Amino acid sequence: MRRFQSIISRIVFLHVLAVAVTSILMSVALSWLLSYATDNIHDKAMQEQAIAVGEHLSVDSDGHFTLDLPLDLLGLYSQAYGRYSYAVTDDSGAVLFSSREDRKALFPVDPRSATTEFLQHRRGTATVSGASVKKTIGDRTVWIQAGEDLANRDVLIDDIVADFYKNVGWITLPILLILLLTDIAIFRRALRPLREASEIAESIAPARPGVRLPTKELPREVRPLVSAVNQGLDRLEEGFRIQRDFTADAAHELRTPLAVLRTRIDLLDDDDLRQALRQNVDGMAHIIGQLLDIAELDALSVEPAEKADLHAVAAEVAEFVAPLALAQGKDIALSGATGPVWVNGNPDMLGRAVRNLAENAINHTAAGSTVEFVVEDDGAISVLDQGPGIGEDERKLIFRRFWRRDRRKQGSTGLGLSIVQRIAELHSAAITVENRKPHGARFTLKFVPIKS
Picture 1 (spheres, rainbow, N blue to C red):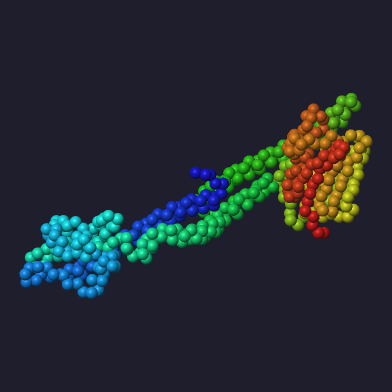
Picture 2 (picture 1 turned 90 degrees about the horizontal axis):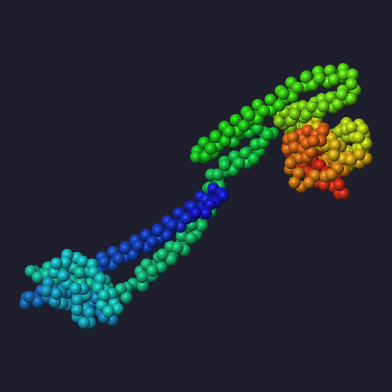
């Protein structure tokens, strides 16, 4: 059987199949019942006609049978009408009376037959169906036969029987269609809690690890599965929390030894050695600071009432990184919107994201070039560099934690862009990466602007 992706489509398909089979079987059964009822009515009518003929049968004083039918019965059995016929036979099979043109019996006579029998006999192209009723008059027994030529049967009854299946089919189709539409509406309503649970499941992310799927309105058959999923989410949240706490605790514990180590390094007499060790310690401190940022971001959420001015954030970051850029022979530029650009967000976290983008741009742009901040009125902030750009195959990798294009290069931790992506997720912002011409990259954070 074809596999359907939707539960509704599976249920509807199987239901339509069941209804179609049921409709066919019901039509056949009703057609058979109608035919059976028609045959019963016919047999009863033939029996009554035979009895009616027998009521006008008598034996005279000479012992001969006489049959005196009234005019209405004579007309019914006339050759001109040709639909009904009768015959009377004795126990030897001799025909005493017959309305047939050949004066023969309608059916073969069996002396051992029951009091009433329903028979059908074919003569040439004609088929006669009727009843044979046994009757005793005095001490003599006769069989009175009454039959109907099926070729001349009531046209109305024949049409009803012949067209019943077709008519029922035409009636069944619209009923089936109405039932199908009703079922779809019922199924959609019944599965609405599942759709709502699916929408809630889509919102579960590291920023919202405590969200759970509701079980109250779900069907009883699905509830154990959803409960098991919620239990799995509980375990994942607990493991996530343990990992986050471990990262934060380890980073905090390393800060003090690094501070002590930096102090002792400053006491060294060898300037070259002191400078080299200080750079190593500063690199380690930078990694620890970023680990603490990640741990903090994993536990934070953006309040709906918080707002930040992207222009002010960009200006502050540009001022902060300017000494670093100038020390490497690079310039900083700020362009775009001149007034406030308000978005929903935490100014400190947005500052971290833009600062990481700026430091990344400074590290990858050549001396004598410019790192530019562009703030747009539609809630976008971009950082542009004049470095080698980002290859298509690297654009998804660069946001992974600890991923670096060149692991031999000093000063890169592979955490900066992952922090940017995490901050973007917390603010429901889109982050895009584009290459510039003739060279360079453009990182853009797009937020939904709000009125001040």
